[in-house]
Image (cartoon, rainbow, N blue to C red):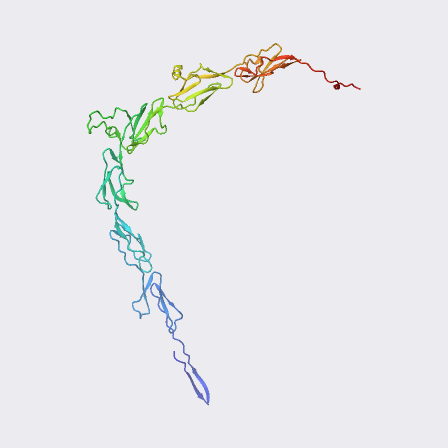
Length: 457
């Protein structure tokens, strides 16, 4: 701005101001806000003041002419994203924060980022993705067989070749290179196998049933015998027996997974009782069933007055009866386990029984209590009998014979005492100790000392 100038004049030699001029800074008019933005002033709008244009979010300044005050803005965008070879993108939006999904065609695998985002800088994040052709690589090994393959890329097929006497576990005899989840692999999974066949068998003392498709509406139960599927003498290699609609193969063979149920005749049981069903597993039966003589399911019969000792219930195992004290072993004629002839054939003594094909056989026994003889010593001695367990009297009124544990008390008349044993216990049919020599003897007393006597006052 220019300096201020003062104008004055003189009147009658007196100085006098007539006008004062003041200089001020020049101000600019406000600027018009740009589209998608606004003008921000750093201080004020006077001479040499500064103003800047600020764009809203996701917009940048586009100055067509640096000399122009007004600025034109435009939205930030990313360049159009090209689809990878053998692939594609989900959208063509190029605005900020737009997300593009990149995918590959069938048979190709995506290498790189699956999603890319447009940033506020106008660039896509990450690096361009590539679609690579899927390849399964060498095929897996086939159990008991092999694969015939020419190519290993996606969609290629490999032929399963199984040798004779085997069957493929797959319904189709091919494997194909495909995708499982997002993994390139040979399908189907698990890898098929060429499973060997199993030969049917029979068991002695039992029956074998082939269970075809058990627990389904197509279930069939086929009895197996040793004569049904044998190869005749002199038969050619092309000989075929009745295959039973393909369930049983020539020469009495069945496929992997076939099931046999084995049962035993009465008197026999399976060696492995918890495994009556055996399954063909690649040419080998899971259980080689066999029927053996049955074990006795129950303990030996109880005998009155005896304990029974045994250490096994298997076939041919023995049990021995032992009488309690004061009891005698006798044959129980009221019951029989088996005929006496069978027991004698086994040469088992009385009191021994044997487990024979699931049944206890032998001569049944009981142990009867042994009775002690009546005590008659002499006419002076009286005998009282009591039970040793509770000392209850056992007299003629009870009509009970003295058995094991009975106690005999010997008494003499008044003025007599027992000379010898005054008690006896019935044990094993006899009295112990012996009282045969016990007798009554008159009781005599010595003269009391004179100092015991005294005179009343």
